[in-house]
Image (cartoon, rainbow, N blue to C red):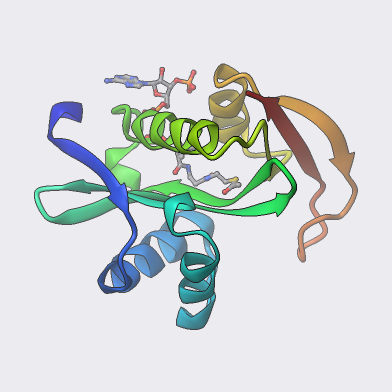
Length: 148
Ligand code: ACO
């Protein structure tokens, strides 16, 4: 299935598909302006994975400090998980960071999100610190970091 997946830059026409994945996978609803702002800030850091014209996953990141990228959101549509889509997106993103001369990637993830924590660990991310009550429902987060 992976061979049919293509990773490319986000385009504003992807907005409804990306918002649907966010609702389904991250249980969040953000205004359209947020995605458009992220896209404006760093076009190469907003990637989507497409299969036969449908967006099945995406990654949105910002440059948060000199030489540091921060992944704000990474999600794959439920039925498409565990088929290498997240890996394809992450590989493309790491290449993009390297090309831009960034040497640190960081992110926050819920402590209870074992699948994502394992996924990031497989990509060389390590827990840098625990973020007590980081999420609005009171759950702790992990700050994870990887050096390139
Ligand atoms: N058959 C079976 N297993 C496979 C296959 C395959 N063909 N291909 C890959 N896998 C395994 C991988 O080895 C990997 O194993 P791991 O769990 O030990 O890491 C696992 O499947 C996942 O790898 P991928 O398929 O490349 O990743 P996926 O497309 O499932 O995306 C992600 C991972 C993004 C974490 C996904 O689980 C997801 O969307 N979760 C819900 C949203 C979420 O929690 N996002 C992260 C929040 S934190 C933040 O946004 C900063």
